[in-house]
Length: 461
Image (cartoon, rainbow, N blue to C red; front, top):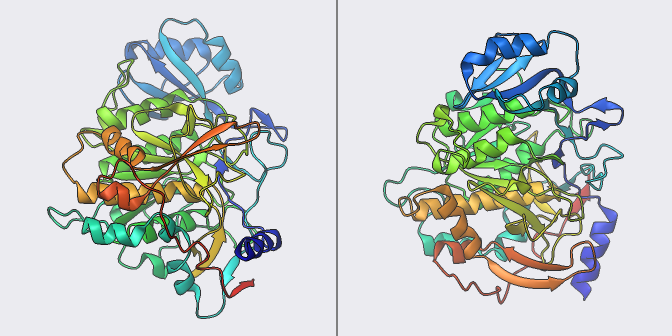
């Protein structure tokens, strides 16, 4: 009880909040959530592109193209808005689907009805000289039995057959490339990319405590580095200093990750509506084709297992892409140190696959520092790291990412809780690293987990 009171007071005193990135609604805050002069269109026959472009006031020269049948990013030239063009295209049999090129915005924007509006914390850092120790000795590794998994699996992220590191792509705001947590743990510079600036320097940009999303990517990548210390991290910057991005950019980054030998990808982004392009790609990174026959030749035979954060709405409203239920991904909610569902977590039994620790997680922030944040954004990279450990332990066992991710889910700790609405009954499949690497499909709840470690000597900066 004493520990609980102490934990409660800490949480009340410090606002340890997530910067999980969410799409805004079509007219949130009076501004549109799409790139104002672009639409995304998939055609049955690419030969129809000139005629379709002319009819709907689009440039016949695509800004981008992926997939087969081809999906085009097209420029609007007649002054209409993307929703107007998309509406006008309804019923055109030459068009498989059409959608706006959605913009992203950080979840702390006021007035969004699918998130609690959490902003990032002013920062919890460790007292002078204790940052690295606090990062290494926090509560969540004990809860998922990480050190025992290292010992039992014989790997911390390198394949047991050839000693090559598993590669984990982190699609986010970029990272602090010079942070000590990433020393020796990054892919070669040519395998990184900044999809905002268009170069191979995916460094975070912004000012700590001023730009609300600054540090998010560094924090997420630091969690991967702690969970699977011997993997190589591939930072891919898809969000700018304001935490804003767009759908086409995410698509390009996932294709890049597959083409540059990533095995696992972490995607801590979301929006309140299903988006066809990303759903199709997440299906294709598993077996190479969608149920409707779309393929992505751009990724060839490379396959990705993708961990996706479920969102911070504190309710059961679906957040996408976590709710897409695609074969190549796991939707990840956040659990607490007591194996309860975190109160901020977006959760639904039909679309959240697993949970992982996401409350008060210590990780890297820019400038060589460490801080504590909460959110499903922090849970997803733990799942990405454990997935990398399993891939390293069984490098040739799983034919598809879907089989690999099923293994992560099937070896999770299975607990049931009855909550008040909106959740009702919650089945908390909380991932467990030890059970995952040892094929324990009846994973027991840890008898002793040092859930209070890592909370001494905090100072507010």
